[in-house]
Amino acid sequence: MSADANNNKPGSVEEPKSKETPKFDLAKENPRCAEWMDDCIKRLNSLYKDTSINICGVMSGHEIIAIIRLVENIFMEESNLCEAEAPIKVIGDIHAQYQDLNRLFDLIGRVPEEKLMFLGDYVDRGPQGIEVVVLLFCLKIRYRDRIFLLRGNHETPSVNKIYGFYVECQYKYGVGLWWDFQACFNRIPMAGLISKKVLCMHGGLSPELVNLDTIRNIPRPCEPLDRGLLIDLLWSDPTNKGEGWFHSIRGISYMFGKGVVEQACKSLDIDLIIRAHQVVQDGYEMMTGRRLITVFSVPNYCAQFTNAAAVVCLNANLQISFQQMLPPALPDSCKAKAAPAIAVDLNLEAARADKETIKPFAKEGSKEGGKS
Image 1 (tube, rainbow, N blue to C red):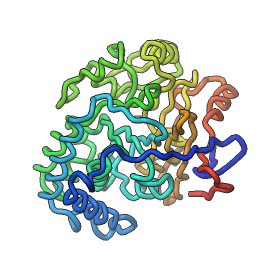
Image 2: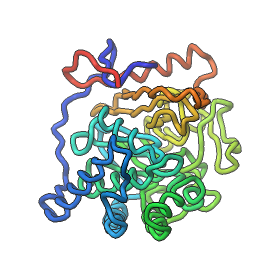
Image 3: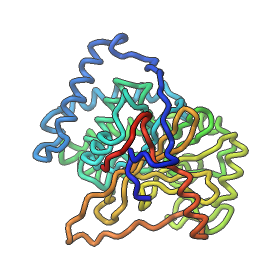
Image 4: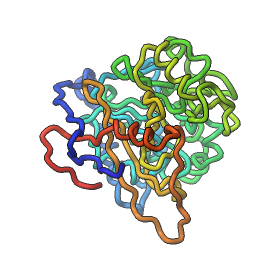
């Protein structure tokens, strides 16, 4: 579906007004810290649309370390299964595409006006991983009840030492900062639960996930090794090639079919799973069975794909809609291709019907939406 974010087409889901206010007001609890965070966010926002400077021009390494120490304490105060109430918007992989993250904010709104849950993979692949993660950390410190950050497989040292973040830290501030980030990443919650009925994680399900307390009881700080629940939450993938569990083509964790998803929803008493981890052409994909959605939130991933970016929106009644940011044109020198489908119904008509269950997001009272 190529409908843009705010297109108010017949059948779009209207967003009810929310009178919810943040439970925690940093400006009242710690005015000096709130003022500092406001200033940090302002400086980081100055990097948007200005590629002539990077974060080194607006923030010292010592200040970033201070931010890391603050936010990791907030992460530890949250459950490993952090819980949030709808309405909320769920955001997939960002992968160091800082400019695209801000374009996405222009489209979907920013905290504290919007409540957001991020599903991980903030760093690697792109050029501005430090900018992405520090901005999100500052927003978390300033508005802890309006933004929720989950861990992705790239928030682990074995991955982000290879795919770009280590070199970025080394170039901008020195390798010591990379180690500080790893200590913080080991404290980020592994999964999220929205209104008790929507389970969110970066990767997917696990044979070891027998109940939600299994996630809550994971001790932190923790570092995933090569197998087990932590690895599966970060690495597993859905598939349409069967109903059960399969060895993953990644060589790590598993792939799981529709039958596994249906059984998990029943045993965990949830209605829906939202995960990220895989690039999909429209920025979102409904798995066969309509119980799992994959979301990917930056366009033209690595300049190798022509994918759109999307965000999954849940209103107060847990009705699902999407906002989509169409990809800008790539240079002719890029040999980009469409991202493949991953777990849609093999029957094309059924797959189309599944997709159309997710309507374009519409703000209450809007008549027409503009294209991103």
